[in-house]
Structure formats: C-alpha cells, structure tokens
Image (cartoon, rainbow, N blue to C red):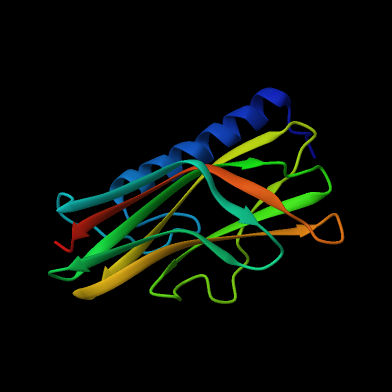
Length: 171
C-alpha cells in the first residue's frame, strides 16, 4: 500500500474544500452547526443611553446596571448592544454580565458572559444579543452584572456603560 505524500494530501484537502464550497453556494441553508435565521426590515427605532461614570458598584449578586423601556407597535426583532469597562476587577475575580428582556428570556439557566480580572485596572467589553419575534407591547431590556471568586466579598465597578436597543420589524 502506498503512503499518502504531502502533495497528494494537499490535493485531497483542496477537493474536499471545493465540494463544501460548492454545496454552500448551491444550498444556502447548508452549514455546520447553523442555527435558524431571521430577516427583518430597516430598524424602525433605536434607543440609546450612556452612563459615562460608574454605572454600578458590582457585588456578588445580580444587580441591574442599565435598563431601557420601550414599546413595540408590531411584532419585531430586538437587537441589544451593551458596552462597558470593568474597573478594579482584580486577577482573582470574574465579572459576569447578562442581558434580559422582560425579566427573562434565552438566558434563564444559561451562564452569563464572563470577563476575567487582570493585573491591569481596566477590562472592557461589548456584548450583543438578539431577541427574535418579540410581540407588540411594552417591554424592558435590562443588563445585569455580578462579580464572583476572589475576596471574601468580591466587588468591582462597571464604568462607561452604553446600552443600545435596535427595533427591527419582522418582514
């Protein structure tokens, strides 16, 4: 039996890559681990707020850093961006951030985004989440934060926070 040479191995990889590329072009729904997708119209409303100082002195329990109330006139997709900077999050601590719509949502039972503390004094982050097919009516987006591990009472500051909510009507 002949051994596969480097040039033949490269050719085999190229053939497989070409087949996958052709399938992806011919069948747009073809993908590995691909989830469902949604398509909406142009954003109808954008809600923004910033807090240039310390928006929350974060402790070991989930606390609200920012929240935004809004009303949907029709079923829409909601896209939420949150940017912030951790202050005094030491190397033995982790900062956790989570976005919730109407007090619940896809994060129930799911771990929040985790930011590890560093020896530097600042760690910045941006998180984003989409909520598909949100019913018309009054809603509230909230950003929660907490600090874990580290000292007996872990704590840090959440600074320079900005929350942006995009409302995109379902097409």
